[in-house]
Length: 142
Ligand code: FE
Image 1 (cartoon, rainbow, N blue to C red):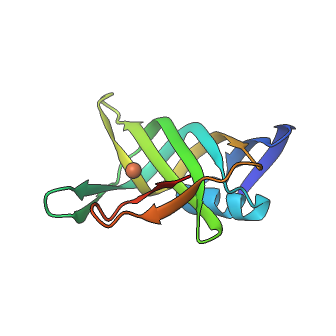
Image 2 (tube, rainbow, N blue to C red):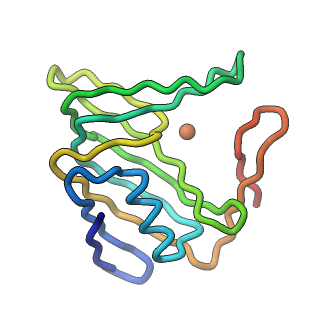
């Protein structure tokens, strides 16, 4: 699903396999390395991507899938923990063939080409999550 190299202590460069699901691959990597706090930055190309939008008025999630070849101009993410397990929060901006962009909270995306990422882990940090009763969102709990 991925190859990686530790370039310095707790800093990894990842190359995800072509056609891999990005979010699942990152989750598998964090589980393998037991990363419970950290940051992610990356780029790549996809031919399918699903974003999740939370409508704050209805408190309903709306998922939308785009099926076309796009460049990931930026993937930004953070890693925390919920119930003792890695919890990833990922956002993506992706550009179409006409150079317009779509973006949002990443649910899942399928690589078509490459996906190159840096993951920096903070093994001594506790960055927890708890579900907020007002918003329903899993907010940070320090
Ligand atoms: Fe989000």
